[in-house]
Length: 285
Ligand code: AMP
Image (cartoon, rainbow, N blue to C red; front, side):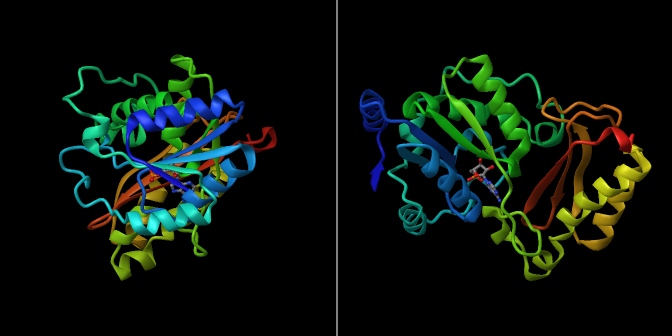
């Protein structure tokens, strides 16, 4: 497995692969790899001739009071995980390699960011779109793999690829969970033992919301009940509990279109997110 730190080398590698007629599967990450990332690498391995992952904690997507400095990092461990997942290249640039100057151009995401994390994390998706745009140019992936754990990110990336005409396919992969239902996340290490015991309530509330919606068909009522449920069963504060259209993320009546139930909960040192996609059937309405 190759570890590439320079932009020039990354670009040369991808161009050589493409010239040889090879397909490239790409998994962008911020490292501290777990089985969620593993599932993406696995899928990329099955569907492409070569697999590139990036490990880059992107300062542009963190707000001033967010966890950029203390975001968990362990390259030695990540390297082993990548080797075990038969990755061909880890692209691991320093911040000054990606942003040598104060950037003169950044991207601004206009749609699908007015709700959920886009509402509370100002500028977050602009930072995500900007770094991905650079990475897509450098890696030239045939297919890029993203987790539905970050469903809003998938919606934004879909817009980025479509609007800027990247000649690549977006592959959205299901959320990988712990046995008790908690979505795997690099940020789970921030949870205290007590918070870790409470955390499965997030996924439980999403499933409960889906059941209640089928019966009640009243989005406002279900949201209210679920905020109360999560705040009673955990020590966290609900940042949002939303039920919206997907991927547009707009407030719509309960209908046959695909909808997302999504929540964010702030614990003492960790903000956790999770979501569930539902497609109500005609007979439920
Ligand atoms: P991150 O390193 O957190 O930026 O995540 C990199 C990629 O892995 C993103 O596309 C995430 O959506 C995806 N990912 C993170 N956690 C999970 C999970 N539990 N299941 C599936 N994909 C995940």
